Image 1 (cartoon, each protein chain N blue to C red):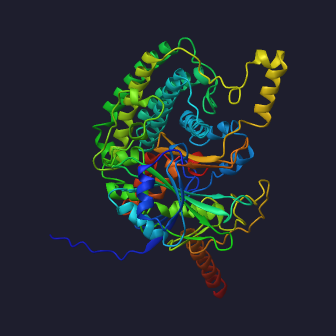
Image 2 (cartoon, rainbow over the protein chains, first blue to last red):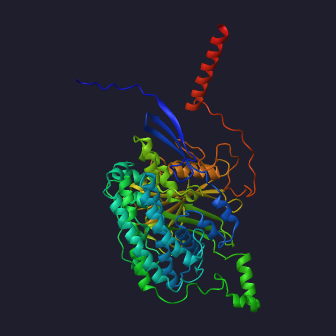
Image 3 (cartoon, chains in turn red, orange):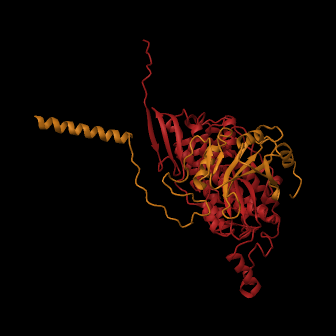
Length: 396
Length: 189
């Protein structure tokens, strides 16, 4: 018997998903237009975590902005620290000592591993692969322990200073990293066995959230979102900062630009980041970690307590801030989610005149409707997960 | 200013009438242009093979209240993926009529970036398809990143928005009708 499929007359339904939805790890609202379960259009509402980052920065001294930058992308606070400090250093026209540059690379890459593990682990567990979620959480914890040993904090690190770093690496840092990376690699291998050829997982992410090369460029996407489409743009390669030009690493690329490619790009980037950390540790030169310039670096406590010059120097730097010459610069680093740029304007005072952050996840979210149009409601979860929107950075 | 820059030199040759000022402070190529014919200028930046600025990195604005005239500057950052160079373009915008042309026909990514500038500075973008606030809410008064917006300013409480025609709404309405119908039926008997 032949059955005829009759097209049911559909009515578009408007559905509001969020702002607090258990499947979206972030405060965001999707105003969906649905036909049955198919998404016809999606209007994304952001800003629920807006706290006036730029306005707050204008009230603070240049150094006091660093803790605010921790709270941008709180999955990779060290990259934010580095990006901001380097933007100010560019405006000051100074260069940090070699040891500091190597340590900045190491901590940035640790942060990137942390960021990718968070993104991949959370996305996998949202799709039901909770085991992978927990495994990656364990790997994340190993990295977190190292970050904690270096900076003394887990998330709000405030480790980088303008002109250097807060303090040096702990004495057994090499061992800690070696042991942690061994375990991380084992965990990643386990996750690979669990997911990479897993039918359920691949069906959920493959060919979902596809974005073409041209569309990705039109939206200004960067990071894993852009690289998954096959465009090789990584700020670390295109415009090498710190000592990235001395490091050997590859930029993993995708083919189709779907969620599976994004996932694979991120997982491969973890391995590349570990390579960079190991190379940087091998070549780590001795020396100071802070610039010796009394106009920028705080004096030693010994001098502050025992001499009037030291005390005055300390007082001036704390109360008035570092004097940054008038002008404007744009400086970009490769964040966990893409190009993290800082555009800063100084009027010559101790406080920033204007700080603008180019937030990669905000720009990623602006292309979200392109990715999800024509897919199912259930596809929102993996697509949103692979953008890795971090409210702190998207909404500032 | 600091060094002779090939990109800026080329731009000045080609668009001598458009460019008001240029510099390369700290290695950042910067040009200042007037707002008239902005979109066409950007189109030629994008399509000229010698410039090839195919990637819109960022759009933002700066408020120079009492420091510069005109008061605002809209700042664009372009990048060329092929030639690997950056360019900053600044467009002065007067306070009385803060409008610039929208770049959404050239780069779709300009949509949210321009909405964010409208949200924070109150600069309108002519030709933008959907210029709404983005990070703040519709009822927000003022533009917070303007320098004359006090940092401790309080916003008035706004009434809750009416929710209409939702699924839940319709269902409770149907229930109410049913209930009224039942009660009516009972009282008749």
